[in-house]
Length: 232
Image (tube, rainbow, N blue to C red; front, side, top):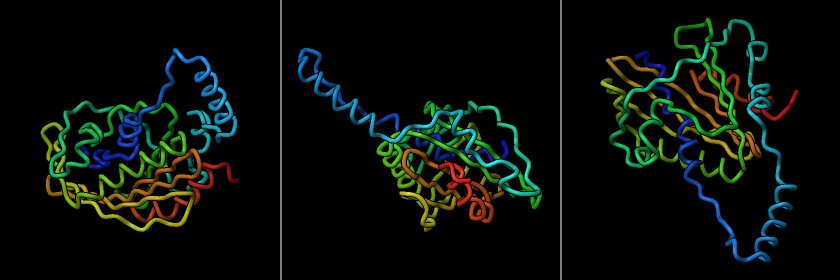
């Protein structure tokens, strides 16, 4: 297993698990007046709520080679892995589900992602993920994930038969968007270590996640946020 695939303590997958746990209320069917009132309020709410972006719209707002500059090549999507996964040493993260540790299937439909290699070095990669959802769900879900991941300075992930030690450190995030989160993760397996910076920014109904080597994340984050929200 190539170590960089374990950066799958991926915000994207963990967000899906957290968001999937959000419940929605219901109105008793035997109260027509109440149902009509709730329906009317919901229609007004939907009319005033910011529009959610479709996967196709999100894909158009991903960074591409022309945004990144010379020396970047878009990578093909990696096939999904089906290894058994177990997390130990971090109860908060374990509650979100072990499959989150290797980027399991994503059930959140409004998403798009891309990853790039940079010819500047073997560890020079950057990936972007975009998600669209209600402001409340995105805020709660992303906050839960980063809180869980940074609550345990060190924990272990067993991917199949491969043990991986993960260390995390919360970082200050640049003042972009409505909310932002950032962390530094070090994955160690077989005596080799890979360091990944991950920063998420929510603006309205869109979350931008940029992951990779720290210098590339810092260099391209602001552009990614601007493009995700339609800035030229």
